[in-house]
Length: 348
Length: 260
Image 1 (cartoon, each protein chain N blue to C red):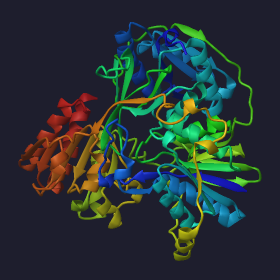
Image 2: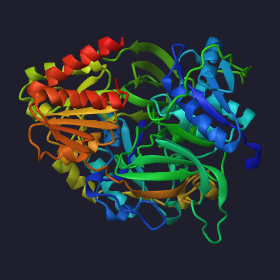
Image 3: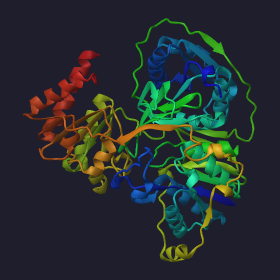
Image 4: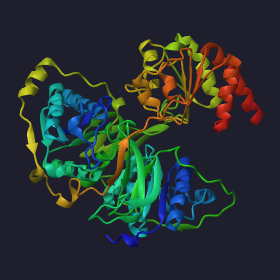
């Protein structure tokens, strides 16, 4: 493999029902940083059926070029035709870096593509940099420059690892949604589009879609929520969760809970955060009446901002909270909801 | 019908995490469990055994002590256990791991391969789809429901806001979500039998159609630049105010952080 042949930062512009997922804009934003460090450009790869008109949106968020793979076989996401699309783009255009969102689609597609073209793939990255590998010179080992350094948590957030892919191209990563910043949108920018179709011939690897069932449940999976309002034993009873639901609604968030709440039968298990529940990383996590057992912390301490409300000032939750409020949740929460409602109405 | 379930012995993260000097995990130094998603995959296979008399083989790659996880699976009801263990396979990333398991699977009979979606140590969700690619068979990942109909499997495949009902002809590979089912417990009789059961142990030489250059640390395209215990973020601010001031404090922080 001649690594020098591989140029440019490419991102997979995920769309579903011909609506581009936010992760595409986030990847373009991060891709621009990497491309600037490398003196190259960002190309978005848009795959679907009837998707060409979406290309300008990618340009508005900074894509220098958009490769469109448009084919009726690509209408709904299926592993095989999408793998064929991306693997063919990679073989044809030889990108140096290829980024995919760590969504339910990207975490299926990325591995299959990387296996088809024989390169490394680093999952669920939360940080991407350009740098040297090894990080510091090691005697007897060539230090390569301008490598993609991919940083990710592992072991349920207990460790952080930085990974490189020095001998294979493209350097591939899936990137956790909501972590990278998209650039400011520049309305009216037109995309530099290149259409590419490698040809799609169904074979046994093309699975049959029998049914598409939307909106699995009324509530968004708490793992996908940007804002979580989580209640614990301190809520005192299932009826008191109404005030958390009100707060969550005002903020466009979801309600979750601690194990004690599930054990008490106040809330179902799929809302449980923690070691035996779900691991969540929302932008904001409200821990309300949650003492903060280590098993609970393991499931939420990666949250960007943690706000705790608890009457016990010695509660362990305050050890991880960015903003801790010692006080009576029954007084604070309803007042907070009202105040936020008023603030948001003012902004609207 | 023959089902192979790929399972992994994973460190119980409650016990803490230890590294070798080269930055790879020191698996020998940690307490272990059967990876939860894999256990759900095993349960799905055992239900096919209950329903259709499927033969269930569990396959794992790891240190010799990974035999324990095979015995646990057999105590739950799996028929056979295959352990792939060899020094030259150590330090593998997902590419080299999937190459290893695909090499073992080429020497096995299967209609259906089930893996967990992801392991709780690496959290990559890559090995299942990569195995399917090496074996050139269809994959359906994120399975939340699974049934067999003739020579096909029908699977509910979970996405962020929906699920697809997909039909794939066997042989194929499914990756299971822990939500797929509630795994059964080992039975006393099962434990008794599993202790005495013979485990098939394979090394590098038993892998079919795999190049040395695709195995172990040397065959891994990804390399660790740095690994470390996560620095826990310390406590932030803590205030004790009257309710009205508390509300103003929180709203102020949400504004400062551009949440509202």
